[in-house]
Length: 367
View (cartoon, rainbow, N blue to C red):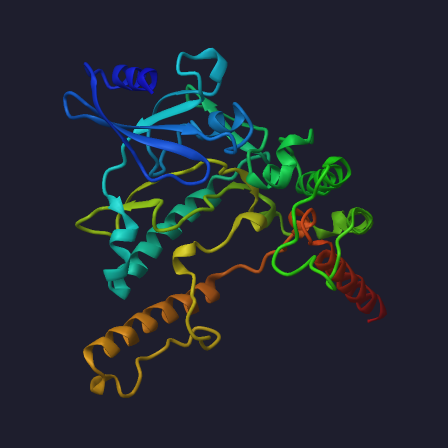
C-alpha cells in the first residue's frame, strides 16, 4: 500500500499522501481514495484474483475513452511482476459529483426522463462509433486496438482456466461459433461443472450430464450460421456499458439530470450490437404488470382522498410503471444465444429452442 501511495503522490505532483480511505468495493476489486498533503484526491484500484485474466483485464480497462464521461487514467500497470507495487493497479482521477443512488429516489418523473435521455445519448454514441472487430479495447498513446476479450462470460464457472480462443474475431459467425467451442471444451476438460441453479439437479429432478450437454452443442453447431441476423446494422461490433446501476453513475448534485461520470468499465467489451443492447437496471420494474404499448398509466381515481403516505406510494408506483412502459416500447427484439449457461443447466432450454427452430423451418418449407 505504501508503494501504491507513493506512485499516486508522484502522479499528481504532491509531496506526500496523508490519508488512505478504503471505498466500498464489489466482487472484483479493492478501491482506495488517497488524499494528498495539498488536498488533492485520487483513486487507486487493485484487482482481486477473480477479476479476470492477468494483464488483459487491467490493460483493457486502462484505456482513454475520449468523449465519454469516464475517470481519466493517470497511471497503471498490468504486470504485477514488473512493478514495485507487486500487483496490477490503476490510478485514476476522482469523479466529481455524487452517486445517482443519493438522488434517484427523490427525483421527479420529468427529471428521471431527462436522465434517461442522457443515458440514451451515451448509447447513441456507442452505436455511431462501431468497430471492425469483436473483443476488448486496448489503447496506448491514443492508438486503439481490439484484442483478447475480457468478458466475464469467458471467465466464470471455471472458464478462465481453460485454454480457449479469446479473440479478436472479425465476423459474428466466428464469434458465436467460438462461444459454443468454448463451452464444449469446458465441459470436456473441467473436473467439476457449476451446480445447477435453484431446485434443478435435486433428487427427482433433471440431472445434467456431460453427454447431454455435448449432444445439444453438436446440434447447435449444425445451425449456428443460420442464427446470425441478416441485417448488417445489428451485426456491427459495438462497445456497450452493461453495468448502469445507481452506484456506478455520478451526477451533478445541483442538477442530477446531468451525468458527470460513469465508473467501473472493467470487462466492458466490443460485441455484435444485437447481443449488446439492453435497458439499464435503473429502470427495472418490480411492481404490478402494466398495460402493453404506449398507454400511459394514471394515478388512482381516489388519489385526492388518500392520506399523504398513500399518495406518496401511489406516486412512486405511477413513476415506476410509466418508466417500465417506456422501456418496453423502446426495447429491441434480439436473438439470445444461451450457450453461456449450458455449462450450468442450460442444455434443456437450448434443446427446446432448437426443436422449436426446427419446427418453424419445417413450417416455412411447407408454405
